[in-house]
Every structure is written in structure tokens, then in C-alpha cells.
Amino acid sequence: MPAHAGLYINVEGKPAVDVRFRVRFHETDAMGVVHHAAYITWFEEGRSEYTRVAGFPYSRMSDEGVNLAVIDLAARYLRPARYDDEVIVTTCLEETSSRRLTFTYQVCRLPDRATLATGSTSLVSVDAAGHVMRLPDAVLATYRKAGRG
Amino acid sequence: MPAHAGLYINVEGKPAVDVRFRVRFHETDAMGVVHHAAYITWFEEGRSEYTRVAGFPYSRMSDEGVNLAVIDLAARYLRPARYDDEVIVTTCLEETSSRRLTFTYQVCRLPDRATLATGSTSLVSVDAAGHVMRLPDAVLATYRKAGRG
Amino acid sequence: MPAHAGLYINVEGKPAVDVRFRVRFHETDAMGVVHHAAYITWFEEGRSEYTRVAGFPYSRMSDEGVNLAVIDLAARYLRPARYDDEVIVTTCLEETSSRRLTFTYQVCRLPDRATLATGSTSLVSVDAAGHVMRLPDAVLATYRKAGRG
Amino acid sequence: MPAHAGLYINVEGKPAVDVRFRVRFHETDAMGVVHHAAYITWFEEGRSEYTRVAGFPYSRMSDEGVNLAVIDLAARYLRPARYDDEVIVTTCLEETSSRRLTFTYQVCRLPDRATLATGSTSLVSVDAAGHVMRLPDAVLATYRKAGRG
Image (tube, rainbow over all chains, first blue to last red; front, side, top):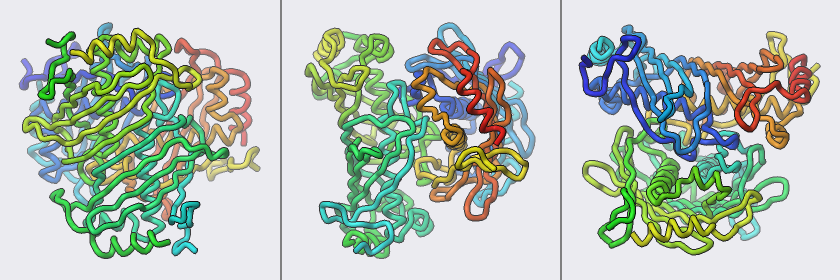
């Protein structure tokens, strides 16, 4: 049973969080489909929702001086999303070390659940000067608890 | 004669600053032309260049704790810009009071100089808590000097 | 009584449509608040929702070769939105002529309903070559019906 | 000697193309640095410049019905870019097959030439219906010629 409202166990047995929204018109480009950079902001929205559900919203992080910086990003594009499509971003936490968090993402279109894109991002904790630091214990504990479902 | 490299006197006798760049693909939308919100970022780029030329770059402002917040915005769209078009944003400073700066913008396409859009933004100085404050004297003096050409 | 689910009569007696979402992190800027251009995309999202509720989604318009181009835009910024804020965009249709639609917007923050920004956009119908044309009767009828509540 | 103005041979002996611009304010986020998704649009700008220099601008491609869709993307972030920084994107063409083009990117900051980010994207040619098709011979020949320097 998920530890938190919104967290569920996916078909691979991993805790996952969904966020659902419609494609905005400004996210499209002159090829008539969603621009590939928009998916990167959707991944972030998935990660935000995961963090919210895990009980440690980004907004609280920034109040406590924790900045999570993306250091690595990968995306694969399978089918285009179009304006007005309803999409779901499913986010899992793949790796939780004291220095690095890795999230994976799957973007599906509704209602047919076709996968449009997949991706992953790794993040590190940086202080105000931009130096990599150990993830604060409270952040780590929150993610580890969520990551166990 | 302009007081600063980059500042020139336009046909209406006002100091003006130009910045020139190409339309980026991600700025287009599914109608095949540049999305109307992209012009707002171009106005900002025009204002940035004006400020740079006037000798008080935004980057220095933020170091000194000066935040200029847009409080009012207007834009008129005449002709669409397209991907790869080269455009020029011409920026003038219309109003310089101790509490408010108003910039106007004209976006032209090269090489035919057709006007694509015009606009204006008004900005106020806000402190870290977001309260409106008097513009710092150094900022005001810089703009007034530039505004006189 | 509203003609459509989602349309309601606001305090000024006008049909209105609400759309609600959270501020995305990428919409913020280095001043720590939402960038002023992001509101323009929120206005568009409000207009999209209005159009969807009125029964003539943008996606159908584009299938039928109707392009609505923004020709005029105004925005006033009252208070900053921040990352993770939940906001509501309320959209009304102010003007429906055979050549021009004018929408007005109010962006409020939840839960305190403070108004963050207001704005308006005027749109015209353009053909594939970008020439202004009369709004198609079906589009006009849909909007007029919605605009009467 | 480069085959085209703008193409040069880099230290690894590969043809490369540079494009140079300033960071725009709207590209920053509330962490005070450039948002990671902005680099993806910079990679695209590098690719656009490469294509322009190679003699087959994207704008001509779209006139001829050629759409190049990104199917794969990777980015690594080393140091943050900040507002007003001047950056250079260096683009190389790593792979040119009849079905796939792979570009690599390096983003450096001026004047110290520190590398801020690196990345790669793979693109395929799609027809109007979105089906993958062989790259048109003229496109392929242009890229192959450029790729030989």
C-alpha cells in the first residue's frame, strides 16, 4: 500500500506518482506538434508532483536553502503530443544516494495510454554558491520513505 | 550624438537602442508562426540591451539588490514573424520617474524593415520583499542620462 | 443558468470559465517569482478552456482551417505568483463581432483569492496565408451562445 | 579548410559550427541560474546554425516538406549559466545515415571558455503524417558535404 496519497505501486513493483494535464498551445511548434524541450518541463512537473506527494515540496526545499540542480538528462521521443491532448506523466525514483537522486519518467497520452516519451534526470544538491553538497537528511529520509512505497 | 555606443537618435528625435537576432524554432507554434508570448521576451531583450548600453546592466542591478518588476504590458501584433527571420527590436525609454520606467518597443523584420509588432512595458523597483520602492539614484541617473541621448 | 458545464455567471453578470493549475518551476525567473511572459500563456490557457467549454475546441478549429491570431494584448501585474502556487484563471468573452473576439482574464491565487494579474487579448480569424477573414459562422455562433451564458 | 563560411575544423579534427548569444532573462529560474530546459533550445539553435552554414536552412526544409523530428536527447550540465552571460554553442555532426542524423553540442561561457554543458540529439525525417522516411537526397548530400568539412 502506498505510504502517501498519490503514490502507487506500478506494474514493475515500484512506487510511482502520476500527474495529469492538457497540452498548452504555446508548447507546440511550427511542425504542428509539441516541441521536444516542452517534455523536459513536463518531466520537471512529474518530479514536482512526486516531491509534493512524498511530503517535501520544492517550495519548502527552497525555504530551507536546498537547491536541487539537474546534472544529467536523457529523453526518448516515440510519438508526438499535440495541442489539447491530455497527458499523464508517471514519475519513479530510481536512485537515492546521499549525493544524487535519479528520477525516471513516462509520458502517456489519454485515453489510449500510448507512450509518447520516456526520460530520466539526475539531480544533486547544491548550496547557494553552487557547490555540490550532501543531500540534507530530512530530504533524503523523505525520498527514501517514498521510494520504498 | 548618442552619449553611448549603441544609443542613437531615431526619426522621432528620441534615443533608441537596437538589438538584432534570429527567430528560434522553439518560439514558433502550431500556426506556423512565432507565438505571441515570445515577443514579450523579445521586448525584455530590447530592454536588457538598452540597460546594457546605458551602462547599468541588469546583472549589476541584481547584485545591488535592485529588482525591476513589470507592472504593465501592452503589445500590438501587425504581421507574423517566422522561424529563421532576422528581427530587430528597437527600444526607447519613454518615461523616467523616481518610481516608474516606461519602455516602448518596435519589432521589425529584416531585410524589408516591415514592423511586426509594437509594445510597451512599465516597470517599478521592488525590494526583496516585493514592496515598491524609489528607484535607486544611480539607476535613475543612468537612465536619465541615456534618455537624453 | 450557464449553457454549458463549466460556464458560470460571475459577480458582474457575465458568463465566465475557470481553469485551475499549479505554477511550474520553469515559469519562474531569477527574481524568484513567475516571469511576466508566463501569464500570457496562462491567459491563452484560460481562453483555451473557455473555447473547450463553449463546445468548439481549438483543436477542431485548426482541423477546419480556422486560425485565431492575437492582434492585441494587455496585462497588468498586481502581485507576484510563486512556484507551486495554485492559481485560477477566470476568462470572459467581452466582444464578439464577425471579425474580432476580445477576451478578458483575471488570475487569482488560491486559497486567498488575491488577484495577481488581469489582462485582455483581441483575436482575429486569419486564413492559411495570414489574411484576416470573417469568423466562420459556426465559430461565431458557438461563442455568441456561450457569451450569452 | 572548411567547405563553408562558418564551418571550421575543431581540435578533434571535426567540422564544427559556432553560434554565440547572450543569456536572456526569461531563461533563468528561481534558483538564479538558467533553467535546464533552456539549454535544449540552445542545442537547437546550434543545430539551426549548423544547418544554415551547411547551406540547407530549416526554413527551406519546411518549404520542401521535410520535417526533422528529435527522437533522442541527452544533456550533461557542468556549471550554471547566468543572465547576461555570453555563451557559445559549438555543434558537430556525428552521424549521417539515410535515416538518422546525430548532432553533438558543447556550450561554453565567454570569456573564460568554461564548458557549461554538453549534449547530443538524434533526428529522423518524418513526413506530414509523422511517419519516418528516408532523408531526402539533397538534405543528406548537404550534411555529408558539411560533415566532411
